[in-house]
Amino acid sequence: MAPVLLVTGGSRGIGAACCLQAAARGWDVAVNYTRDAAAAGRVATAVRAAGRRALTVQADVADEAQVLAMFARVDAELGRLQGLVNNAGVVDRPQRVDEMDMARWRRQFDINVIGSMLCAREAVRRMSTRHGGRGGAIVNLSSVAVRLGSAGQYVDYAAAKAAIETFTLGLGRELAAEGVRVNAVRPGIIDTEIHASGGLPDRARELAPLIPMQRPGTADEVAAAVLWLLSGESSYATGSVVDVTGGR
Image (cartoon, rainbow, N blue to C red):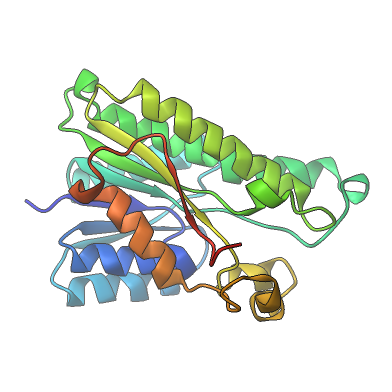
Protein backbone atom coordinates (compact mmCIF):
# COMPACT_ATOMS: atom_id res chain seq x y z
CA MET A 1 0.00 0.00 0.00
CA ALA A 2 1.13 3.53 -0.75
CA PRO A 3 1.80 5.85 2.19
CA VAL A 4 -1.08 8.18 3.11
CA LEU A 5 -0.65 11.95 3.44
CA LEU A 6 -3.08 14.57 4.74
CA VAL A 7 -2.55 18.16 3.58
CA THR A 8 -4.60 20.79 5.38
CA GLY A 9 -5.55 23.74 3.24
CA GLY A 10 -4.78 21.56 0.25
CA SER A 11 -7.12 23.16 -2.26
CA ARG A 12 -4.87 26.04 -3.31
CA GLY A 13 -1.42 27.59 -3.20
CA ILE A 14 1.31 25.80 -1.29
CA GLY A 15 -1.10 23.12 -0.08
CA ALA A 16 -2.19 22.20 -3.60
CA ALA A 17 1.43 22.10 -4.76
CA CYS A 18 2.24 19.75 -1.88
CA CYS A 19 -0.62 17.44 -2.89
CA LEU A 20 0.55 17.23 -6.51
CA GLN A 21 4.22 16.73 -5.67
CA ALA A 22 3.28 14.09 -3.10
CA ALA A 23 1.27 12.18 -5.70
CA ALA A 24 4.27 12.27 -8.03
CA ARG A 25 6.36 10.73 -5.24
CA GLY A 26 3.89 7.90 -4.64
CA TRP A 27 1.71 9.18 -1.80
CA ASP A 28 -2.05 8.74 -1.61
CA VAL A 29 -3.42 12.13 -0.62
CA ALA A 30 -6.25 13.50 1.50
CA VAL A 31 -6.98 17.07 0.40
CA ASN A 32 -8.47 19.13 3.21
CA TYR A 33 -10.42 22.30 2.47
CA THR A 34 -12.67 24.66 4.40
CA ARG A 35 -15.03 26.16 1.81
CA ASP A 36 -13.96 25.64 -1.81
CA ALA A 37 -15.02 22.08 -2.60
CA ALA A 38 -14.57 22.63 -6.34
CA ALA A 39 -10.93 23.67 -5.96
CA ALA A 40 -10.23 20.68 -3.70
CA GLY A 41 -11.91 18.44 -6.26
CA ARG A 42 -9.61 19.72 -9.00
CA VAL A 43 -6.56 18.92 -6.88
CA ALA A 44 -7.91 15.44 -6.15
CA THR A 45 -8.52 14.86 -9.85
CA ALA A 46 -4.90 15.78 -10.58
CA VAL A 47 -3.70 13.39 -7.86
CA ARG A 48 -5.72 10.57 -9.40
CA ALA A 49 -4.34 11.44 -12.84
CA ALA A 50 -0.90 10.80 -11.37
CA GLY A 51 -2.04 7.28 -10.46
CA ARG A 52 -2.63 7.80 -6.74
CA ARG A 53 -5.75 7.61 -4.58
CA ALA A 54 -7.26 10.92 -3.45
CA LEU A 55 -9.88 12.00 -0.93
CA THR A 56 -11.33 15.48 -0.44
CA VAL A 57 -12.39 16.19 3.12
CA GLN A 58 -14.01 19.35 4.43
CA ALA A 59 -13.02 20.55 7.89
CA ASP A 60 -12.28 23.80 9.69
CA VAL A 61 -9.06 22.93 11.52
CA ALA A 62 -9.99 25.26 14.38
CA ASP A 63 -13.01 23.07 15.19
CA GLU A 64 -12.06 19.94 17.15
CA ALA A 65 -15.16 17.97 16.18
CA GLN A 66 -14.51 18.63 12.49
CA VAL A 67 -10.86 17.64 12.84
CA LEU A 68 -11.80 14.37 14.53
CA ALA A 69 -14.32 13.62 11.78
CA MET A 70 -11.72 14.41 9.12
CA PHE A 71 -9.17 12.00 10.55
CA ALA A 72 -11.83 9.32 10.93
CA ARG A 73 -12.67 9.65 7.22
CA VAL A 74 -9.02 9.40 6.24
CA ASP A 75 -8.68 6.27 8.39
CA ALA A 76 -11.74 4.68 6.83
CA GLU A 77 -11.18 5.61 3.19
CA LEU A 78 -7.41 5.77 2.72
CA GLY A 79 -5.92 3.90 5.68
CA ARG A 80 -3.38 4.64 8.39
CA LEU A 81 -1.76 8.05 8.08
CA GLN A 82 2.00 8.34 7.58
CA GLY A 83 2.32 12.02 6.73
CA LEU A 84 0.74 15.35 7.71
CA VAL A 85 1.32 18.79 6.23
CA ASN A 86 -0.08 21.49 8.51
CA ASN A 87 -0.57 24.09 5.80
CA ALA A 88 -3.99 25.60 6.59
CA GLY A 89 -3.57 29.18 7.72
CA VAL A 90 -4.85 32.74 7.46
CA VAL A 91 -3.49 36.25 7.30
CA ASP A 92 -5.45 39.46 7.69
CA ARG A 93 -5.41 43.04 6.48
CA PRO A 94 -2.41 45.17 7.48
CA GLN A 95 -2.96 46.80 10.86
CA ARG A 96 -0.98 48.01 13.83
CA VAL A 97 -1.46 46.06 17.04
CA ASP A 98 -3.24 49.03 18.65
CA GLU A 99 -5.84 48.85 15.86
CA MET A 100 -6.55 45.11 16.15
CA ASP A 101 -9.47 43.54 17.96
CA MET A 102 -9.87 40.32 19.93
CA ALA A 103 -11.82 38.60 17.16
CA ARG A 104 -8.89 38.98 14.78
CA TRP A 105 -6.43 37.56 17.33
CA ARG A 106 -8.67 34.60 18.13
CA ARG A 107 -9.01 33.80 14.42
CA GLN A 108 -5.25 33.98 13.91
CA PHE A 109 -4.41 31.70 16.82
CA ASP A 110 -7.39 29.34 16.50
CA ILE A 111 -6.54 28.51 12.88
CA ASN A 112 -2.78 29.03 12.64
CA VAL A 113 -1.79 27.54 16.00
CA ILE A 114 -4.58 25.53 17.64
CA GLY A 115 -5.59 24.04 14.29
CA SER A 116 -2.07 22.79 13.62
CA MET A 117 -1.78 21.41 17.15
CA LEU A 118 -5.11 19.58 16.86
CA CYS A 119 -4.12 17.98 13.57
CA ALA A 120 -0.68 17.08 14.88
CA ARG A 121 -2.19 15.44 17.95
CA GLU A 122 -4.44 13.25 15.84
CA ALA A 123 -1.57 12.38 13.50
CA VAL A 124 0.65 11.38 16.43
CA ARG A 125 -2.07 9.09 17.76
CA ARG A 126 -1.89 7.22 14.44
CA MET A 127 1.83 7.40 13.61
CA SER A 128 3.73 7.03 16.88
CA THR A 129 5.12 3.63 17.81
CA ARG A 130 3.84 4.39 21.33
CA HIS A 131 0.33 4.09 19.86
CA GLY A 132 1.09 1.07 17.68
CA GLY A 133 1.89 3.14 14.60
CA ARG A 134 4.59 2.58 12.00
CA GLY A 135 6.09 6.06 12.23
CA GLY A 136 5.68 9.03 9.97
CA ALA A 137 6.46 12.69 9.41
CA ILE A 138 4.77 16.00 10.17
CA VAL A 139 5.67 19.22 8.39
CA ASN A 140 4.36 22.52 9.74
CA LEU A 141 4.23 25.71 7.68
CA SER A 142 5.83 28.70 9.35
CA SER A 143 6.73 32.08 7.81
CA VAL A 144 9.69 34.41 7.49
CA ALA A 145 7.45 36.79 9.47
CA VAL A 146 8.81 35.00 12.54
CA ARG A 147 12.22 36.58 11.93
CA LEU A 148 10.94 39.92 10.62
CA GLY A 149 8.12 40.61 13.09
CA SER A 150 5.85 42.12 10.40
CA ALA A 151 5.57 45.50 12.10
CA GLY A 152 2.72 47.58 10.74
CA GLN A 153 1.29 44.60 8.85
CA TYR A 154 0.39 41.58 10.96
CA VAL A 155 2.41 41.20 14.13
CA ASP A 156 -0.27 38.76 15.31
CA TYR A 157 0.39 36.45 12.34
CA ALA A 158 4.14 36.60 13.00
CA ALA A 159 3.53 35.72 16.66
CA ALA A 160 1.29 32.79 15.67
CA LYS A 161 3.93 31.41 13.33
CA ALA A 162 6.57 31.82 16.05
CA ALA A 163 4.39 29.59 18.21
CA ILE A 164 4.38 27.03 15.38
CA GLU A 165 8.18 26.98 15.29
CA THR A 166 8.40 26.41 19.05
CA PHE A 167 5.75 23.69 18.77
CA THR A 168 7.78 22.06 15.98
CA LEU A 169 10.93 21.99 18.10
CA GLY A 170 9.20 20.62 21.18
CA LEU A 171 7.07 18.02 19.41
CA GLY A 172 10.02 16.90 17.31
CA ARG A 173 12.04 16.17 20.44
CA GLU A 174 9.06 14.59 22.18
CA LEU A 175 8.55 12.08 19.35
CA ALA A 176 12.16 11.54 18.29
CA ALA A 177 12.31 8.01 19.71
CA GLU A 178 8.80 7.08 18.52
CA GLY A 179 9.38 7.01 14.77
CA VAL A 180 7.80 10.40 14.06
CA ARG A 181 9.80 13.33 12.72
CA VAL A 182 8.43 16.88 13.03
CA ASN A 183 9.88 19.74 11.01
CA ALA A 184 8.81 23.08 9.59
CA VAL A 185 9.28 25.09 6.42
CA ARG A 186 9.62 28.86 6.69
CA PRO A 187 8.52 30.44 3.38
CA GLY A 188 9.31 34.02 2.47
CA ILE A 189 7.28 36.04 -0.01
CA ILE A 190 5.49 33.43 -2.11
CA ASP A 191 3.23 34.33 -5.01
CA THR A 192 -0.02 32.66 -3.93
CA GLU A 193 -3.64 33.63 -3.32
CA ILE A 194 -3.09 34.19 0.41
CA HIS A 195 -2.07 37.81 -0.21
CA ALA A 196 -5.41 38.59 -1.82
CA SER A 197 -7.19 37.20 1.24
CA GLY A 198 -5.30 39.81 3.27
CA GLY A 199 -6.39 42.58 0.90
CA LEU A 200 -3.04 42.86 -0.95
CA PRO A 201 -3.30 40.81 -4.16
CA ASP A 202 -0.12 42.31 -5.68
CA ARG A 203 1.98 42.11 -2.50
CA ALA A 204 4.34 39.37 -3.69
CA ARG A 205 5.36 41.25 -6.83
CA GLU A 206 5.50 44.65 -5.13
CA LEU A 207 7.92 43.36 -2.48
CA ALA A 208 10.27 41.70 -4.98
CA PRO A 209 12.92 44.50 -4.65
CA LEU A 210 13.29 43.66 -0.93
CA ILE A 211 14.22 40.04 -1.69
CA PRO A 212 17.90 39.28 -2.41
CA MET A 213 16.84 37.08 -5.35
CA GLN A 214 14.66 39.97 -6.59
CA ARG A 215 11.58 37.82 -7.08
CA PRO A 216 8.87 36.10 -5.04
CA GLY A 217 9.02 32.36 -4.63
CA THR A 218 6.54 29.85 -6.02
CA ALA A 219 4.30 27.35 -4.32
CA ASP A 220 6.21 24.55 -6.04
CA GLU A 221 9.51 25.75 -4.53
CA VAL A 222 8.04 25.59 -1.03
CA ALA A 223 6.38 22.23 -1.71
CA ALA A 224 9.71 20.75 -2.78
CA ALA A 225 11.12 21.51 0.68
CA VAL A 226 8.01 20.07 2.34
CA LEU A 227 8.29 16.84 0.35
CA TRP A 228 11.97 16.51 1.23
CA LEU A 229 11.07 16.74 4.93
CA LEU A 230 8.33 14.12 4.46
CA SER A 231 10.72 11.75 2.73
CA GLY A 232 13.39 9.39 3.97
CA GLU A 233 15.94 11.71 2.39
CA SER A 234 15.64 13.85 5.56
CA SER A 235 15.73 10.88 7.94
CA TYR A 236 18.03 12.58 10.48
CA ALA A 237 16.12 15.87 10.61
CA THR A 238 13.59 16.59 13.34
CA GLY A 239 12.67 19.75 15.22
CA SER A 240 14.23 21.78 12.41
CA VAL A 241 13.10 24.72 10.28
CA VAL A 242 14.04 25.05 6.61
CA ASP A 243 14.09 28.55 5.12
CA VAL A 244 12.69 29.00 1.61
CA THR A 245 12.95 32.78 1.44
CA GLY A 246 15.06 33.81 -1.55
CA GLY A 247 17.72 34.97 0.93
CA ARG A 248 15.46 37.34 2.84
